[in-house]
Amino acid sequence: MAAVFPGRARDAGRSDLLAGAALVLGGLVLVAMVGRFAVTLPEAAVIISAAVLAMGVTAVQPGLIPLAVLPLLLVVLRVGGGGVDLSLSDFALAAAALPALLLAKRPFSPGLRAVLWASAIYQFATLVTVVNNPYTANAVEWAHAWMMVSGSLVVGWAVGANGHGRTGIRLLVATMTVLAVITIVEGAVHFVHGDFSPVYPSFPYDMHKNFAGTVCATGAVMVYARPAWVGINRRWSVALMSLLLGAVLFTQSRQALIGLVAAVVVLVLRSDSDRKRSKVVLLLVAPLGLFVTNLVQDQVESGNQFNSVFQRLTWFQDSMTVWSSDPWFGVGLRWWYTDRFPFQFQPPNAEIEVLTSAGVLGLAAFVMLMVVSLRVAWKLDPAYGSLAVAVLVSRLVQGQFDLFWSAVQGSVPFVVLGICLGACWYAERAAGARPADPKLARSVPVGSA
View 1: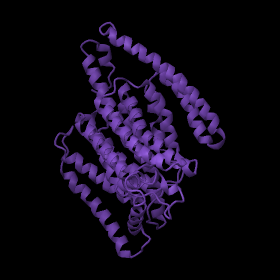
View 2 (view 1 turned 45 degrees about the vertical axis):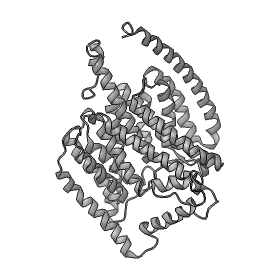
View 3 (view 1 turned 180 degrees about the vertical axis):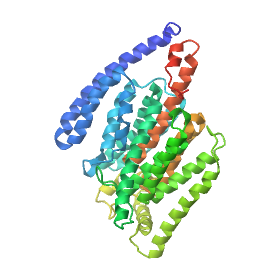
View 4 (view 1 turned 30 degrees about the vertical axis):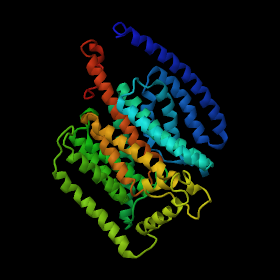
């Protein structure tokens, strides 16, 4: 190919040289960060140390480290405190994002560039509130949100564009299935002892029921979408779907169930889908909606002003009080970590959280980011885009009733979108190279093209 396109080969050589130089510089920066965190945040220092090693491996096999890091993106164990309260998932994402960015396949697809630009606009809009409200948690969350969107997209792209899309999706589903098995086992033990309350998984560390529920619901959506290039056959999909859905029911996470139902409805009703899905499925998911309705109705009728339904209504009212302090630019990201207000809670709604934190300006940019992401996923070849659409819809619906900017729930949908964009790009490039380069065509995994 270099002989056919000599100009392109020279450009690639210059890009490789620049990427190598940037890789060395990035490695030095990470080494300095290890020294900084070794005492205060040893867990972060371990992750960053691994990133230094990862850079060397990535230079040899681009996409391998982002692929290996995917299971760690679901580890929500918290490290740090106060304004620097992040999860191991965040540090793993940062460790994978840097080598992925430096050595990612170029050029980025138009869809990926569109979402990256939308993310940059959102970051610019929220930068106003960072400047207006100078405190540590504000600046940390600003960088954190950028990493969850743009960093996740680039990591997913590195996996898909290097031909590892199938393995990447399978790794995510496998990790989610492990969490589902843990949840079901703990739930079964509780049921044997007559405890029918929601399950909060405690192995290998304590997890909230809404975290476990939303992650397992996302896995169920991915299994139901089941694009051909992922290679999950019908028998496996039924088994995995049963495990993941069972775990969601054990957690009794209502937002997870609503998000799952919404994604299934979108997939079934999408006319240009990658494969035909029976509308009978809508009758099967209807009981899930009834289950959620009954849970909410029971809490309303209980009259307990401290249950989750009434608590959310109180939080929404208090959030509007906070927003009124600065309607246009917001009071700062993670304002609940400060003592400026009598309330210390993260609003359980995506738009209300952004509205209080970054004002009307930030909310407009957030809506644009979500619309652009959905539009890019929708216009992608349905063989790849249907999976991304389903996961994004599920997350956005969940985010209407739960925390949105949280580590795993916020990053995974954009990782999946990046994988789908990268896998589609890889398949198109491989298909275009078949007549001139049969060796490259034979290297494409079955189902990728």
